[in-house]
Image 1 (cartoon, rainbow, N blue to C red):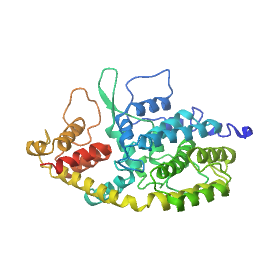
Image 2: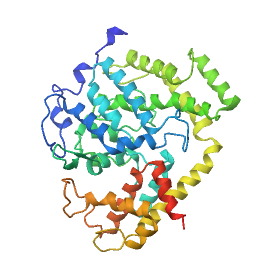
Image 3: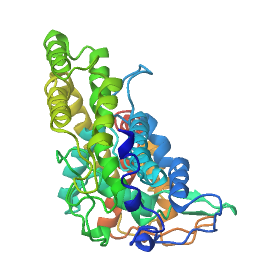
Image 4: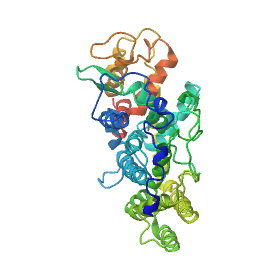
Length: 402
């Protein structure tokens, strides 16, 4: 395997790249230059410090409301993706700084309650806003418009990530089953994406994160499911048979990551793309099938699916009732008194993005004065999508407390 090391180095996101200027472009300038970090590592630390990343530790990965500290959260998943993708990138000779930045940021747009929350917000946005909600696009929206960081003068500004990182967030959809990923040839405005998985990443580093996303969750979801008693005798037997068929010591996080990472490093070439051997691709796909059969479609999730829909719809409807059509200066006093967590939090959330000047903020004002109903409802969706599971439950508690 060492003979293939650094095979992709000529194609890495580096100053020699033919699209370097476009890949490193930012929609807004940063407040100062930094001679110690390259542009991608600077993006990595900006994501690390933003509040959307911090909240991932309290967002569902697969299993909701788990009190055990040993069940994977959305933040742990993101760190697994960072580890897997940076290992592959380093071996192939790609930019580890870009890979780590994309990996750390790839799920900052995820809704509370995991993919169930995403499904519910998609229903809401299609009905009320005439568009889809998908966490990859929402991640870029948060990176571009919502997340703020203080500069050295304590002025809040937008993240202003590079094109390459924003593109990697948008194109990371890990549910696709392609093998042999290659970056797309054209760099275009990211608004041309209209669905998850529509286009490949513009960089090899983004392609690596995409495949790492799937590698990271397969084994860990099985481990968590087994710990919570989801698999049963039939599930364990199916896993044992798959493990035996592929000669693995264990079909767990360590076994799957080691097998698939080594296989990608052994088989990927610039001509063939980021590719798994047929045997490893079968292992990935069969493991995913077992996850759907014994984990994701398990009957024990049905009450949670109904609960997630109830909570998010009720919270959204309560926020929609706050719309008045007049310039927003503060949440309606009656609603604020009735729903202090939900409406008080919304009042605090929207203030930095209103058109009026606010001391300590120099960011994009995306909501105007909230007289436009569509913008008001978009703000409500943004607010909900950024919530942790626990905060959403507390906000819902306002609605059922008298």
